[in-house]
Image (cartoon, rainbow over all chains, first blue to last red; front, side):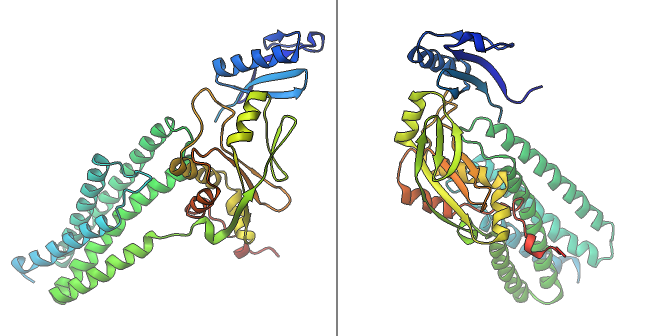
Amino acid sequence: MLEERILAVITTTKERIGGGAPIFICDTEEEMHEVAFQLERCLDSSVHEISPTLLIVVKHHG
Amino acid sequence: MDKDLIILPVILGILFGTIARLFMLRTDYRQYPTYPHGRIIHIALGFIAAFIGSAAVPAVMAKDWSAVTFLGLAAQQFRDVRNMERNTLQELDKMELVPRGAAYIEGSARAFEGRNYLVMFTSIITTLVSALANIWWGIAVGILLLFLDKINMSGKTISHIADIEEGRVRIEGSGIYVDNIFIMNVGLKADRKVIEERAVGIIVRPKNANANVTLANLGQRQAMLHDVSNILGVYRDTGEPMLVPLSKRNLNDGSLGLLLFPQEREINQVIAVLKQVPVLESAVRLPSEAYRG
């Protein structure tokens, strides 16, 4: 069982992301932050910035 | 000593044992033991420990050695109660916005068990002295033991092992720093804004090599975060996972960077509270006393 999990990926560059987590593709950075804000609240998880065009939503345990 | 005369020393032992437990009982800001039923449980167990200790003395004096076995039984009971206490605290810890952590809870549970033993010891000695010498000696020894019990309760605080000062909370892009210690990556601009407005940064510098290793302990660090949140309130809720008080180590010198969210953003109060955080028994390390060739 993984301790930390990527629950979702939010990006404007869909062609660079693959894998098993849900990917939310947005047009602008503002839209990215709005989507991330809602997801953070709904999933009770943390949003981290990998690059200005790529955010990940991570569930931390403990 | 015949049966009638032994009653008074036994009563004295029970009295001093129970008083010792009351002395060592403090429901302060930590609300442990909880009021009123938690306190009742602690006092009742203290009374039982005092009774067992006192009752063992006349039995042994009458050469009834089997009485010693029920001291062993008592020890087993106290251990079971310690486990029960620990489990209760751990379950309740899940309901805290900033948890105490396993080390803090273990310290509380251990102190609970230890105090029952101290009560038993106080009762035994008081009853023994009263029976062998006289009542007045018993009272004198009882009072002395009360003082020793009280001294035993006090331990070191963070102020003894570290210097505490304010650190500057910096936001560089998505990274949150306290002075030059990286704390965490915060992706959302909204969260960064809240951190900029509400967060408080503290640097804790260990005073020596022993303090360095003690402060590295995760349980000790969580205890510091919990105490500040407990006393000064925490600007946090469920569903706000980024507003989490964190501690991170500066790997070069072992100093700690703390990111805190006190409800009342008073630096002097935060530092005063941190100075009073107890050094946890399970976190104390003394590497300077080890042989290192």
